[in-house]
Amino acid sequence: MSDTMIHLDNVSRIYSSESVGVRNVSLRIKPGEFVSVVGQSGTGKTTLVKLLIAEERPTKGSISVGGWDITRIRSRDVSLLRRQIGVVFQDFKLLPRKTVFENIAFALEVCGAPPRRIRDTVPHILRIVGLEDKAHRYPRQISGGEQQRVVIARALAHRPKILVADEPTGNLDAMNTRDIVDLLLKINEFGTTVLLVTHNREVVNSLRRRVVTLDRGTIVNDQEVGKYVL
Amino acid sequence: MSVITTSIMLLAFVSVNTLLVLNILAQTAINTVEQRIDISVYFKPDASEQIVAEAKGYLLSLPQVRSVEATSPEEALQRLKARHAENPLIAESVAALEANPLGATLSVKARRPDDFPSILTALENPTFAESIAEKNYDDHRLVIERIRSIAAKVERSAAAVSVIFTIIAALIVFNSIRIAIYTHREEIGIMRLVGASNWFIRTPFVIESIFYSLLACGLAVAIIFPILSVIGPSVANFFDGTSFDILGYFWDNAVWIFGLELAGAIFLSVSASALAVGKYLKV
Image 1 (cartoon, rainbow over the protein chains, first blue to last red):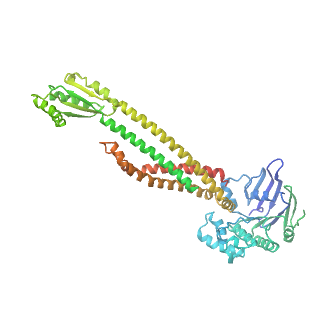
Image 2: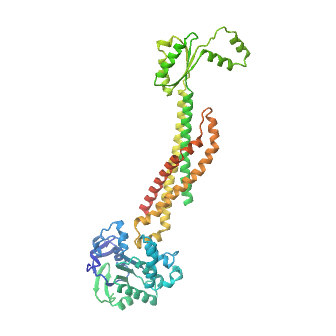
Image 3: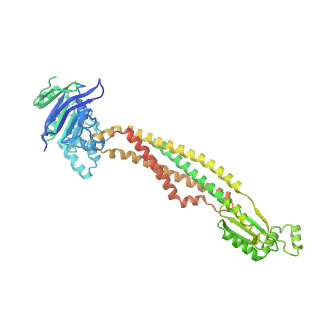
């Protein structure tokens, strides 16, 4: 097994001379690590996430995920990459006309999973995120924290090697925030590499895990047991 | 939007089939006129049966000749009497004749209208040319050319209408798929996020366009056959003397006609939707 799960080598994403996503970012994340990427709005955190899931391609440098060089990944291979990286966003992105169960099952259906596997997998994931009793509720019938749990459950459907959470607590109150962070830690304990992108100081400081700080598109701090320093 | 798409595709189907009907009618009209053209070769009354038979044999040996029908002097006289049976003056005049004044007749049909001049030349053969009293040939080429000219103009108009409807149908399919992609953008975004393959995302839109083609083709069949059963008798009467059944023609060739049209429609709509998917669905 490789000792690097995510490797960014001198990566830049430049939109125009005035607009830079990230510049000369080099980052190496080991399998099973829990890394927080922090920084103020517009510092390139979301660009980093987009580069990792191949929604954007780097202007220069190289990116590899699990030993797979995705720098110039072909369009038809992006789906394979995204089955290895679970993604959680601040705005949930749940389908309102599908139940909690169906939203999670959807992630498996679109990848051609057989119905039997879906029937077995979804209840198991619902137990992990603590929503087994809300499987048949619609997103509007559950709280924001629970919706974010559904999103995490959906991201776990493919048993990804990496879970990328981009501001997962941005829309949540303190109690739900704590629940989501605890859930991410629990997932990390199972061996999944977690990349938490946030600007929530309390969350980062309470984790006592590796913290990578971005400022104006560049890494200005990378501490093994870090704090929110900006 | 799907109603508009199906309707325009239906119009394209109907106009293409109208073009087909016009084409068939024009060809039938030309064939009917061509079949009625013949050269009547009137032999002198004293021409022997052997000469007439030789002439018939010679004509049948020509590649341009499709058929030769011989009428003996006696048959010719009987036909004359029958034709003028209600005219006492002619009947009396014929009865007063001591000998049959009519000679044998050959009715010659050519394979193509253009063959008649060469057949007329062939009749100059000295073996029997002296025995021929008269050759009667009505040049119908002008009529055929006029039919062809009118048919070509009507077909050109129908073809233009078909092309216009086909282009509109393709554009509407393109637009329908574009709107469908926009409507489902949230779902598509989530599909992409959770690792759906490009084909998994694209296929429903392509299938949707195939469904439009199938529906429009089905509706076209449901509309065209009743119309043909209504206009069929009028068309049959128009070609008096020729048994022509436009409805029967469509029944017999339905698989080919609608199969090819459906294949064309599917090709067109799949191409249009693939174009829309490629342009608006960045997967």
